[in-house]
Length: 247
Picture 1: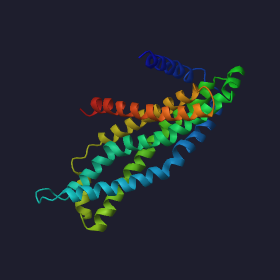
Picture 2: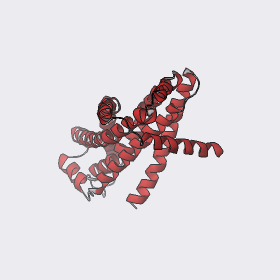
Picture 3: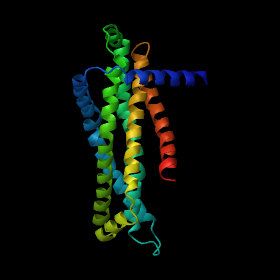
Picture 4: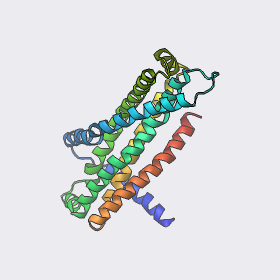
């Protein structure tokens, strides 16, 4: 239990240092653009691919389980919409990105720690925590909502394409299901979650990388811990946000 409190305390202190004494804004703008490319742009392919297949699978599975004539066909479009908007596009995509983005951040900062690059920055009077971590947090919180919108669009479009092409549902029924009892706040809800998840992934991964000690083996262990803790915190925050905003 004491180790948990120690991690919480060190994480809090690190975040305080991250958001205080920032360097020049011009420097940060360049770093943020670079991080947007590394965190977001380079992840668009895997997000789009997974979303396409998920939308198609949800459509086919829903169609396969509608055996009763009492259940209307437009339920397929409704189910695909709800699945993609409420959970997959934000939560599942963030869980996947925690492995790709989180491990990269932890290993990058961890390598800088064990090679004493961070110590050199501190000696030169640079706020190393803010310089290394803040651009990553800002970039992720900026680009994640756009990635979520892409995931929603790809999943719903793939569901329509596979449903119509296989003959399990007509385009008219699918479109009716998409619009049936649609609440725009559900989109806002999932975008809010994506911003929170972006902060969790980048800050937790940076924390584990920043406090890495030892050599290459410890860098790998820090990357693993970063992914595990990010996933756990994402699931906990997902429950809390859902409880606060939807119920």
